[in-house]
Length: 438
Length: 168
Image 1: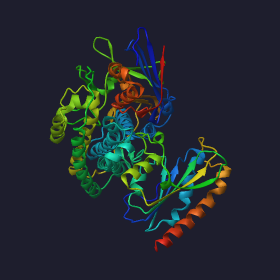
Image 2: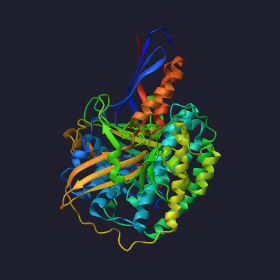
Image 3: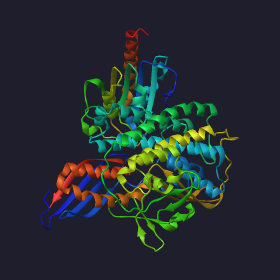
Image 4: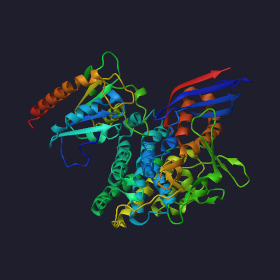
């Protein structure tokens, strides 16, 4: 592409596909320098927060689970945690273990699907997984096997793998038997081998160079890799209870997107973009990984701080290995609860919940009245928190490909966006690319 | 609508009948309606599945099966209620149709990926029923309702014939 003086180049990708929602990409460059990047999410607002108002507090987990087909457990868990917080109960013991086990299933399913079906083809130069499967059939079969273990774990604990229906406030409608869990452990042991082979495979990939100075934000628990609870921490020293989230993180509406942009207000009252998701969790909680997960991370050259977003695919694979080992630990230590759920009585109160969806922290806040009727609902999903980071990655990354033609540029933009497995969305394959030059 | 058999059932079917669609989008649910009417055929050798909005289990269902009959709605082209019987192994889909969503593995992607991995059933028949209304409703349009029993009868006869050939 020419870089003639005062030349302005506008790249518009009208539709992002491999998506449930709708989004596009707009890049404006002048004289070979990026002037503006906008990830345009124009999926019609789904009004879930409004939909929840005047509904019963018990309905929040199932209603919010419908927001996303790939991470319904995250929505259920954040909703449960917030409602239970409002009502003054904490689900602990075997019921909490089962929730964490269910969440492990979702992490495995979501991460494996993204690694094998969506992102690996980018690194190996294929249009998609179907084309990649011609040369890597064993690897794709391995991905399908691993994904199925995640799906099956969600079915076992959650009742079904898509939009699980077994979760309720206080616990579950029905708990699995110890025998069912024990039988499932055999599948997890096989999956453990596949997870390690996945990491060995990813160690052969060539990762584009991009190092950025991110502000990482994730949950943090004193003894556990964060999945279902913890404080909100950042790489800049933030350490707050979930109930303080809205004092430090704000959402704002930008004209080019119907998804809200989240931003962090730091101690100096400055707005900062921040990154949530696997790379943030990994960097802020490395010490809580299992020894095996740490070992393979180090074998891959992954030690905190990892600041190359393209390595997020490998970090996802580390988290898959962790989730499998954590699931085995939870099953091994499981004792059937006395009851499938704790009693819960509504209180007029605010409740706060935050858990680690596969793509990053998912915050819920509800205000309910004494009858348990929802008066206010607020949901901050990971993609709105990462949206600005994605734009900034592209701003720093795409210039080097301006001279290599439309197809190459398009491919690299897609790959960079897929680093975040955005859930507008979910993944990106651009149907239409227009380059307008003045 | 729920799946009648889980993927973990200890059956060894040779034939699967799979209805796919969205039960909240009008005529898109016709595959589910037809398959639901065929659940009485379930046996040691026949598996019936209803995949409501989620086609991602397709590969796991048809792996190692001899024959699969899929029922799905198709877009309105000529005449609502028109039935097309397609041999899915006789054609390929363009790459444009093969992009993946994190949320689901679509029918075309599942077929093409299974072809590459050589795990397709030896016979894969798709009954496509042309729809008229894909709006937010749980009702089928009259033209589509009128052909449901015909499709049920046709598939029943085809399954009978298949099993006779397999001497089951």
